[in-house]
Image 1: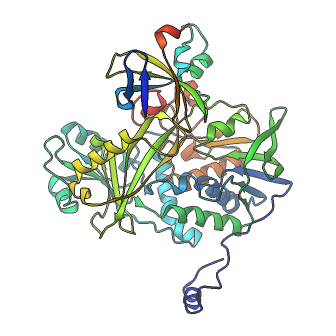
Image 2: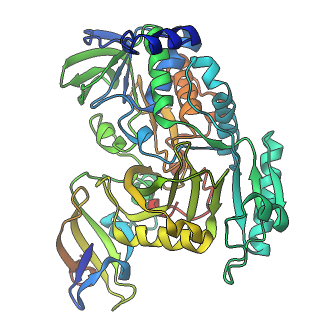
Image 3: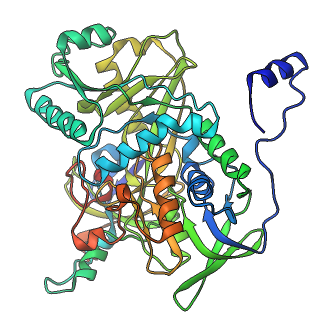
Length: 87
Length: 416
């Protein structure tokens, strides 16, 4: 599997660290109730198909990436910089 | 159908033409007391113990493919009870005891081989951790023995004991651990359940879970609707999809774990050996193939096949530990889909929907848990109370902070 980093180009999967689903970007407010934190930390849609998850180009530019890919075929359709897309 | 020595002799002399199927192929009835979704090891064991321990036989097991065609046939067949944390410790201890009596209980040859599991250590710190683990296992009533360098050299002469980076200093030996024939376990439980009247329905995919006023009423399947008073979900690998049919969102992310088998070799490895520093473990099957694997591929996937980086990593670790395996040709590799939970431990619990039960999240430890999981899940479904050895495998333990994090790696699903 190769991931095309928007800054560095197409690179081997070994250069990237996988964090998990993009749910991690929706951090609840500090005073949010326990169920919001439970959902954020633990519960996942876990789709068999298209997913959007977070990878860091750890052995490259260090950028955090949001990768749209298929969990069944491993096809990658879009890679964006989290810094440019995070609301 | 049952086996005995006389019948095997008779069939052997008459061309083996008189064997009958091991279980019936019934049409689904319109209604059952209990429907189990998933005809893998855990689901079949659940059905068996519902019938045997609780006398409940108006039960159907629904399997979308064929019995035992999922993860129970796609693992590395290791059986052990060497866990350290409360919750896991008593559960796997109970499960190993069931393994030890399984072949008699089922009258079925599961090729249970208690050849012993050896966890190698390579540093003082790792040794201390294994001493502690061994003491915990002994406290639980299981067997654990610390082996020092010379003993390991005698038992495992083929290892590279003087590897400069990871010299083998000793190991934690768990003699009652070992391997079993994975398919036979599924078949044995299937036959045992069928003989007691459970309907095993194959090629029957569940497409919906019916509820009414917060209570489960049945399932929709590719072979029609089936009403049920209670429904158990036992579909590790696809738990999130099936639970979503009932509106549940689980603390599970699916990951791939690869495994590898070499061509058949003469007997050279008598134990299950783990090399934790290299994320590598290995045993030799009764056919002679070396069966080994490593860690997850680390990113969410349902592909049932792995990627090259982890395959290379496993081979490198194997060569570092046991250079002789470089002479063997690799026969095949595969990937199993793991229900990874945020603490690396499973779930056997009720759900917020009355009458709907969940057995899931087995991470990469499902095979050794087959009898224990079936026994405890059957207890939960039959009595609506938690079976003591599995009482901590609760669905809400993450929200409560009462996690069972055996590897102490935090709440990220892929790190366990």
